[in-house]
Image (cartoon, rainbow, N blue to C red; front, side, top):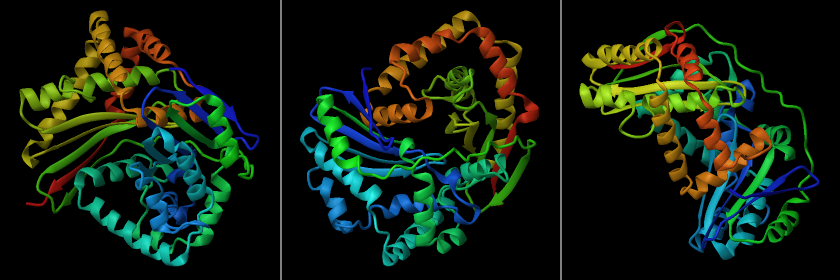
Length: 409
């Protein structure tokens, strides 16, 4: 896909992706997330993401929310372990309004004490809500154990104790240290001349003070595998199995994305869905996921089932792993899997807000954006030997960690 990049003097990059449509999409992506917090600040990055919608130097909460919603646009934000993202979808004519609002909430929020206290209550309710959803809570607990002692194990929401103690000083310090201008991308997908976007970028973001510093992130060590069962007041068992995996920059990243798609990814024809759900009727939800990060990755399998079926489900998963190790994919099987994955990626291009965020992320991660043809070529380049190596490394029984939430009898 065609794109253009303009870099401001302060290091902020403006990404433009031309698209003929009445609807445009935009985001501001910041390379700062929960892993960048100090130990006593768990939940701070997410807290800031909430507070930027509360008050700025010239707008109150209602004015912020109505600035785009009053013209039918959609405005939202999210925080991950490594990124903070604000995004919007809007009619073509409201680009100026959108970029001005992004500037206002990200760089001119005032973080008043009364709003901070109210939002702490909202986040504490959000934490409680997650704890009431075992399929969500087990993911957080699993990652906490997988990365025990490291920032990547932290719950993005924080804990009731840490959130309650967060201060305006914490907020100002985090923004000063982590919102580095050379690690910010403003991206727009829409039917605009590139020079219009660069002018708007200069208008709203050229005056943002330049801030650059070295990346302070420390890569996690690999902890010994564990198997833990926790009893909870729930109606069915929930289980996660997995391991640390390849980073964004590992040569096997594409191969593991492909393996994940084969094993438990999108669609009803994945290995795990065909075995556990279709053949044995054990689990309604059975899926795997691979999340590559800047210096590591997570490969995990999740399923929920009746307590008495948990052990059989885990045995079936291990059996399918063993089968792939003992009988590697043939050239024909690999080719079919590549075709499926390529087709899914092509269809995913229709999610335009997801596309522009992914392209902004690629610019931050790699300082470039691969075309679809390049992405497809990388998938085609994965060999049966690559897949065999990946299977043996990622499906190594000695490295697999498991966490089970069991209902109390």
